[in-house]
Image 1 (cartoon, helix red, strand yellow):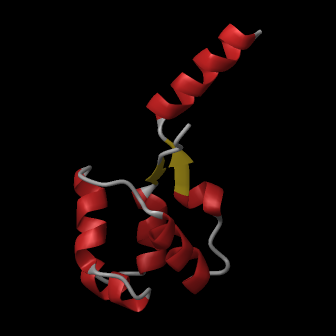
Image 2 (cartoon, one colour; image 1 turned 120 degrees about the vertical axis):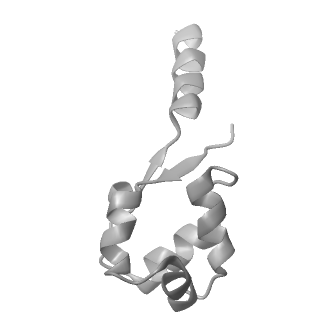
Length: 84
């Protein structure tokens, strides 16, 4: 099963500390279009995106910034219920 994470943008905004998306993404070594695609729903956060944020912000907490997509967690729950 593929797990899809989503971003809690209010928590991401706290890391940005007033910087715009381009400045923030450059500070973590990524292209600004990556965040634009994630915010618009055209893409999900990649492993690189997650790793770069957590690598540049070691005090950031994974479970505060990211969460499993509801559709994926629903599928997982159905599979577990059928197994029991």
